[in-house]
Image (tube, rainbow, N blue to C red; front, side, top):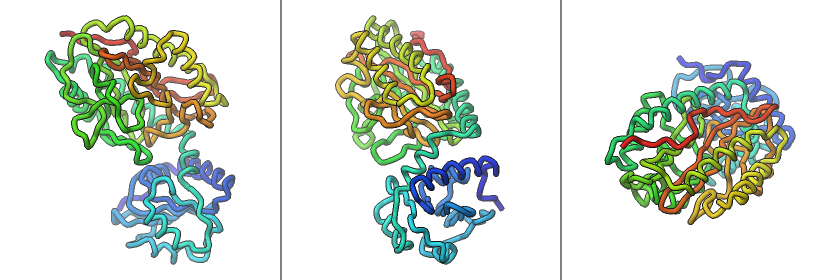
Length: 390
């Protein structure tokens, strides 16, 4: 029979300690967790059920599925109401529920279990806790980065003359999966959907999308309007590749630009500026406000007279970076209104990108660990535009 918690005891204690310090600061006496990403964070696996975490004492793991998991604090239930008998008289004055991700009906059902308790937002507390990675987590992210880099170095050899964007993406997906990519692109919230990543060719990069991504694309069907649209890869097209980097349950986010033939001078200038921005922002130290990174990037873009193309052309993204980990949109957010401040062992993706009309999207994206001496890149594939052989 499997032990439920797959994390080393020391690692679990580090995560619980950080989370509990944030609970205490926000006066939450207990959390009741059911979101898959948060369950994975606190157990090292995904199961159907709940984790009840009091401010003091051992966590309780209420499991519905799968059967036969064992370990300290494991209790099997058929419905959430059965948790009350185990929690007993230790009803918290304030309980945190995942108000950002759980459905309204589920929240109301859980709220009824604690009629005397004030309800707080556990989602915000958990996002803050997960924003600062342990060494264990960073090692998993580093492993994903190594495997993702290995895949990206093979991309120039996957292109065949006459390919469409879809055909190229399928080949990249195949190599990624064989390298060990889990295929799961965990995203917090309901405002974004994605399958395995984006390959954007030529003018398709200028097609607006309803999702809050840095780049868009028409997509293959109105039910998923983002990414490749079946366009032929033609001479002079930029080919931006932003594919899934989840190999360990913790992901890296990396974008590189390829081309069929020579790109025009404007696109080449924008590509170099993206590289320069990443290099400049990588000097940022802990305690730097996240919005300062955005402002520095925008300053460099305006000085180069490339602002009309920065972070989109017809439709622009309002950020140039974001936290990465179990999900692809964690804290901190690198945007002009962000209140986040860089902390040691944040892991962030920086993606200063450009869309040049009739050429396509250019630029790079790297995943970085925030260290006491600056940002350390965890995704180290070549940054220059690589030309496919025709």
